Length: 125
Image 1 (tube, rainbow, N blue to C red):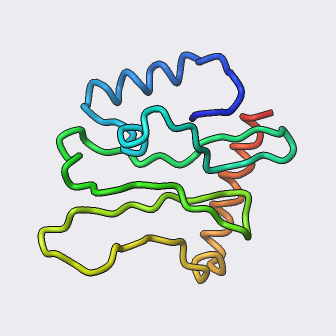
Image 2 (cartoon, rainbow, N blue to C red; image 1 turned 135 degrees about the horizontal axis):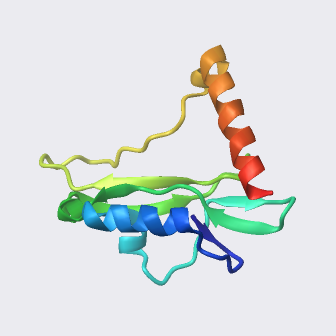
Image 3 (spheres, one colour; image 1 turned 60 degrees about the horizontal axis):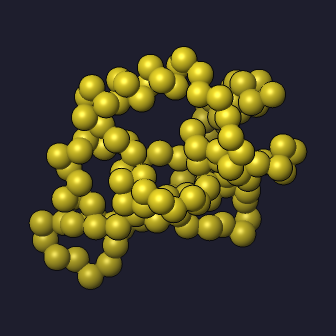
């Protein structure tokens, strides 16, 4: 996870980065934007920005990606990633993925999101 303030890189992050490297996987966004410091989440409580979204892909598949960018949201403290691919057939529009609000009405999905949120906030304290 990228953060706006400097952080100590713990052992788990080092292991994860080494594993990704061994598998020839990388963060596609970082490959396209090596020097750009943009973030997808702002924590008002901590006053920090973090890049919590990652588009992990195999290095051999870079040619499948045309463009990747962070899209802002005025309704949330979380922003998303927009990915444009190089399709085999030429299409006139890019395809975007967004979370369907109907999923948030599903009890199982809500419970899983709540559990994951609690774990995340405990780890960031």
